[in-house]
Image 1 (cartoon, helix red, strand yellow):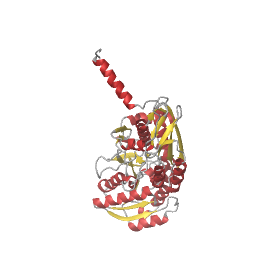
Image 2 (tube, one colour):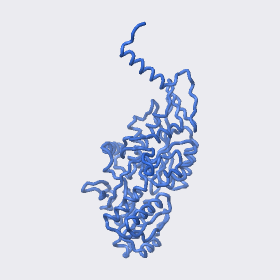
Image 3 (tube, one colour):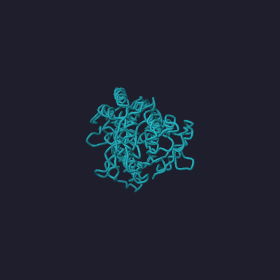
Image 4 (cartoon, one colour):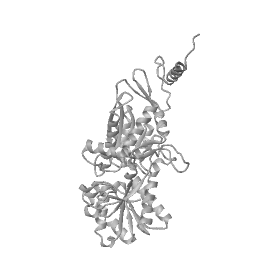
Length: 422
């Protein structure tokens, strides 16, 4: 018997491990996944879809995210595991019925491997259970309502790279109380999941700090006459109004509040739903000096600057909203999970277990994204919900110029809006 050299033994060991990890070609694939498998034929595309708002007053929110997805695909040279990546999508309209209709459309296409979206929390509240029940994994770049990842209510297939508004609302309240010195605040929401949840978090934290919430009011997303809300605010007498609503209603409320002499000295503050040059178009000069809470772009990693350069080259302009980087991270997180979950035949056929894909996303730990270090599983009991993958960094910005052409978020002297906290 001949003796094997240490190098030969090492080669034999490596070969054994490779064979152990690959299913022999003679053994046909049998799907044992609890919720089924997707099979992608040799040369066929891996189909991913988006569910984003891409029309109407809030379209910049979804278009901004779609561009993040497209750049992530570009960075993969349009291919994954030897298959081209196909992207399609549906408009979710940033409301519950739109999300429900979009989910029904997507659920009918079982060739989809995974979904990026929805954009808005009101959409996600109705769409996530439908898509989850259909076996899909969906990763939202911007649906931030706390209840979406509450372990008691979370749809099993729902994840997000965006922050949880339990963080954003608290930061906004702390800024108002500790930095602005506000002691009386009022909130206004539009009845949607996102705005009502965020206003509630703000009010709760503001009270905890010792502040007084003198009113919690509501408008409708399609309201144009805000006189009733303005009258309520005048009677309540706050030092600050926090209204984490969207662009259309936010523009009208801002203009009509500033037109009231009784509210002339009241500070106005919105959230990431208003963080867009489109809000400057909607509110005009009335937007000047107001505050907005939003993701802290200065806390993103150094690769974010490379992303911005790619964005400028591809689209000829700066990002128009706040969740482009979160969408980029969501797409890459989905790609990594597909690579982990897929079983590949010698001829290139892919088999992706639906539950295996979810498990791979949930197992994500210390994933280096543009927005930070992403971990999707509960790492500290009571502190992080499964499905909350984001690495939340929230800042407060002030609008210094109402000209939409001046939109240049950041910390530089000419930034607009300008980061002022922390």
